[in-house]
Length: 470
Ligand SMILES: Nc1nc2c(ncn2[C@@H]2O[C@H](COP(=O)(O)OP(=O)(O)OP(=O)(O)O)[C@@H](O)[C@H]2O)c(=O)[nH]1
Ligand SMILES: [Mg+2]
Image (cartoon, rainbow, N blue to C red; front, side, top):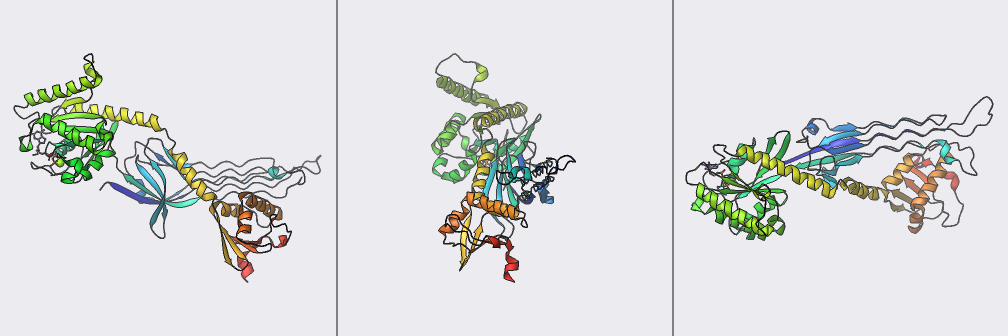
């Protein structure tokens, strides 16, 4: 089928460290703090691009890294931000988390369906704050600064289902496969018996500087909406396409059918399968006009469609140019009318895409990001037995990594942050007592809680677990 799937490893840029520094000037003996902030690391961003047609670029290169932020300096000099790394992917790319060990895909991070739509797959670390930020009424000379936040890194799965802009729909043997072969480089099987095509074929069509994708769907028959002749299977393919190219055989084709009758039946099947298909934009393609004695059928079908359109607008004053659906008489064999058809489809696809872009904006990425952020804020508390508890969660772990562990002031600040996140309350609820050991990543410290009204064991802060074990 038309599924392209790759796995890539993305790493954003680490944040630069904040600076711990004090003003030193000849005439100012005890200057205040002046350490600048570290710069933020760049993000790794996936951006849907109409110009990209496959994920082939990611088959050969798997590792992508954005720039890191530089460190802050004295004299309030902030570090520079790292540049984002923007990777182009085709429209229709779905992005999922991926576990390299189990080879399983996880949470859907984004479904990039519009040109320019972006999602951040690895967020750059924030720059650490310089010591100028930690001045309080009681702490005039903060002797610590934050380290840079480590960047996110992850494996992600990119999957692209080639989305068709238009689908060729019609009875069997009306020439759908012949048409896609004429319009694109697709080479499906063509034969003069019904149901030659059993799975859809996709073709990329070029018209001027525009591209669009056409699907050749297996033929539908009366009763398809009830499942006859694999109807459901086939109709499902049409549901995601914005434009229907309704193909009718001018010669009556297979079983010598009547073209007007075919046209009505197919529309009936579409409508009874789903109401949305009944109102989907169509372009009618009357095929095989190279065959003799087709003029009469063309005339009848054309006037039938016009009359219907006239009824729909409820009057007889209408401009020929705006008649919907448009009708194109073509021959897939001789090529008559094909250029005009391709141009008309390209134009319509362009209009539909623009309308869609306006209708749902590019809010997607925000929604996806938000979901993941919420999850990152979550943490869990586990009792490892006795008086030992582990706290796990991405945001909590990042805070720990960001802390300069040799510096007591920095650790006190970390405790303050953990308290604000509700970690302290969760530990108390899980039964932690003052003095119990709390582990986060490879660090351990003694539980000390204002909630339990005790002042115990603050001295043991910051002893790495490995050392404890010895
Ligand atoms: N004379 C003529 N024959 C055509 C034209 N287009 C298709 N045919 C013939 O019609 C027959 C059916 O064509 P296909 O392209 O296989 O039709 P289809 O709609 O894909 O058929 P299914 O896949 O079975 O639904 C073949 O014998 C084609 O050569 C045309 O424009 N003129
Ligand atoms: Mg076919």
